[in-house]
Structure formats: structure tokens, C-alpha cells
Length: 284
Length: 321
Image (cartoon, one colour):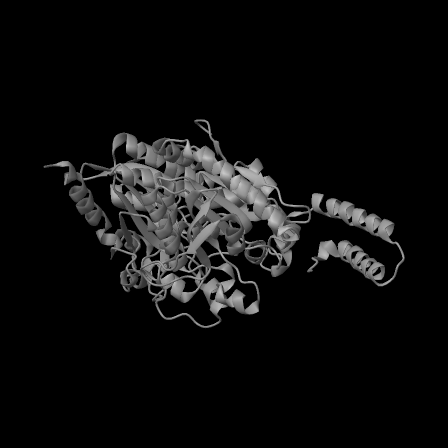
């Protein structure tokens, strides 16, 4: 932060969770470099007031925005374990501990049940700050339990994706979460319970190639990176530069893989509309 | 014959054997004892080597240039086979092949990743890396199997789905995801075999089934050891370590409950006796189809989903932790 020193330690948001959204007093936009106070940003749901850049935020920030702070967290007792005793430069166990400490979260996905104008919705949202938002067994299990919960109570389901893909440290277990979550989503589809997939920056790899692309409705935040392979891998494979805007939300909308792009400021209202429309489907 | 690094002791013995055979053909000296001795030696050496393979060596075996590929097995296993092309949307992918055929009087839909047999064909087959059309062709064939009530057989052998610009434009991720969702609900039995490389979503894209088996010397993982090394170790030099850490062998996968069965390979691997391998595979398919056909459709789908629902390793915190 250079010559800006924090005046007070721990200027925090209202809830007990540390947010991925910036804290401190000032924040410089990574896109247009304009500096705003965090208070200003927060009032603008962490969108740069100058260039509309959507700053990355965390699961609980989304719950606050969508449910106006009133929600119940579900399945928060699920935690990852180092089942394979996986060690690269670090032991997976230590990575998990470090991530927990850094983020105050237990894993890269949190689930909340809340309401938008009296209409129930269950949201499973990912945190990129937790090991790159990677999908391991806990993510698969939280989605599975959420789906079972939604089936039992007939509540629409939404996943907010923000992930680099499968968690390598869980090897084939993480791979199988693609199969597990897709299989479970097929049950929702069969039973006529709506599933919304909301893709945010970034959504790549095994997450895109499973639940993120399987919504009855797929929508994204502006300019989010969305793809199967990451841009670096593609560049290395084809050995040339990638076109401008490639793998961004606007590109995917154009290619027919998204239904619409939504500004975070309109998210709650748009979800309200969707829930209203879908809730009327049972009427004559 | 191509010998891999760890097979070098076999190369010497095989050369010796060939020399002696040559001598015996040229002269009238009786060397049959010597031949017998060498053959036994080769056999016991093979056993020794092949019972102590590490993860990386199995990865190398799965990529052995003489290893049989999908079309070889299909032609060996099916009495009749008609290859079908195209996804009816964009094009025909060459890295996934498939069609209709018969196995012991049973009509089946059979498909798999196809690698090329030589340099030119390897390019033609895109090294077994499918584009979205491949996955969509596979789905089209599966939906046809469902209409006619034929079992589906998928042979898996890919270093991954192709990471290219066009693949992204046409929705690689969507194609794989769609297959997973549709395969979960397919109303006919699905049998999957990893016959070579089982790399990540590219493998899984035709790999969700009632019974998923791995040939003995194959691997299945979320990422190739090379890519894993490059990402987690930030260098390409740790592929052996990555292969160990990923626990990607058939034994590991069975132990973890992520596959249902291992299909034994002939001594020295499938490429040492492709015909025998095909026979083993065919017998296995026949047995599995007979068993799966007995299960009522609803039960089949419920069981399939329940199997995947169980996959995962996590802890449950007790209240207050």
C-alpha cells in the first residue's frame, strides 16, 4: 500500500467472515487505477465507480448483497482432509491450514439459504481466496447436500462459480467431483427444480466443465474470465497470442454459452425476477 | 519392438535370444536348451520388472507407442462394426471414434478416444485430444443407444481435451459438462474402460458409467504428471514425483473406490499380446453387459448416481470446533 498506512487495524465488514473484498481504507482499481475509499466501493457493491470494473469478492459478500445480510449458512462443518498425503513444494495439509488462517473460511465454497422478497433460494458460492477457489471433495459434497436440501424443500438452487478448476492435491477425487455434481444436478433437472449458474471472474477448468455450464440459466458478471483451459495453457499449445476479449463473459455470450451478463448492482433484482417467474410455473 | 527405459534388461535378453534363434536356423547345432533357458529368463525378468512398477513407469507404459488403441479393440471385439461420424452440429472429430456393432449377438454402441499409429496419423487424430465435436458425437451416439436400448461401451485413452481457441469458442467445457449430466441419466447400461491415459475432464467426458474399469497399466488423474509438475513445482522436472503424489495407478483408484475393477493385462503389458488383451476385454464386456442388463432402468440410474454421490474424502467438524 506504499505510503498509505492503515489508520486502524481490522477495519472489517459487518459479518464475522473476512471478505475477499478489499479491506483497509483505500483501494486502487486494477483496471483503471482510480483510487477510491473502501467505504465508497462497498456502497457500490465493490464495483469501481469510475470504470465499472467488478472487483473480486467472496461468498459472504454475495450472500450479503443478494440476501441483504439475512441468511443461514448450511453444511459449514464440512472440511477438507489430506487423504492422499499429498506433497508438492508444500504439504496439502499445511496449505489447507494456511488458507483457513488467511481467509477465515473452512474451504472454497460456502452455502447459504436466504430469501429475496420472501422467495427462498439456496446459494453455493465459491471463494477464490481459498486455494484458488479450487474444487475438491468438500465442494462436491456441499453441492450434493445443497441439492438434496433443495429437492427436499423444493427450493431453487444457484451456484456462484469462481475457481481455477479442480484441486490437484485431491487428484482423482477432485476429478470425480465433476461427475458427482453433474449427476446430482441431473436429479434437480429431472424434478423440475430450477438451477441458476452464475459465473464470476475467474471460472475455468473442471468447474466450468461441470456445474458452471449446466444451469437452466447461465449468466455471468461483466468481463469475467470463463473457459475450459486457462489462457496460458492455450497460448503455450497454439503458440500464438489470443484475441482481445477471448474467454471473457461478453465472448461467451456471443458464442451462445451464456443467457445474459448482469451488473452486480442489478443482481438481486434480476434474481428476484427469475424466482418470481419460476415460482409461477405451478399455476394453471 | 520398442523398449522403455526400465525395460532395458529385457532388450538385451531379447537380442540374445534372436541371435541364438538365427544361429540355430543357419547351422545344425542344437541350441534348443539355450533358447528355452533364455525364454525362461526373459519371462522371469519380465515378471520381476512388471510387479515392481512405480507410478511414472505405468504412465510411460500407458503411452507405449505399440499399445493397442480404440479402433484395434473395436475391430477385435465386435463381429460387425459400422463407424458413424459427426456430431450433427458442427463437424466430425477425429480424436473420438464410435459407432454401432455387435458383440456375441448383442448390438452395442461403442466408442472411444483414438490416437494415431504413426506421425501423420497422430496429427490426424490430434494425439487423442478431442474437440467439443468429439464429445457431442459421443453424446449423439449414446442418445441413439438409449432409443434402441443398446448398452454403451466407452474406451478411454486421452492426454486431455484439446486446449485450443476453437475448442473454447465452441464450448469445450459445455460439451464435457453436458455429457456428464446426460450420462448420469442415460437409460441404458454404460461400461467404461480406461485403456491407456485417463487425463482429467477429457477422459471423464465419456467416462461416467455403471461400471468403470481400468486396464492394469493405465492411469487416471485430474491432471497429467507433467502439467502437475509445471504448476505445483513450477518446473517440468518433477513429473516422477507428481506421478507418485497423484496416486494415479489402477491399484490406487480401486483402493479409493473411484473405479469398480481392474482388468489384468498380459505379462509385459497389452502391447506384448494385443490379441490376448482383446480377448480378455471382450470376455469382460460380455460378462458385464449380461449382468447390467438384468437391472431395471430406474434402479440402474439410481445406483449409478449413488455411486458417484459417495465419492469424496472430507471431515465433519463437531459443533463448536
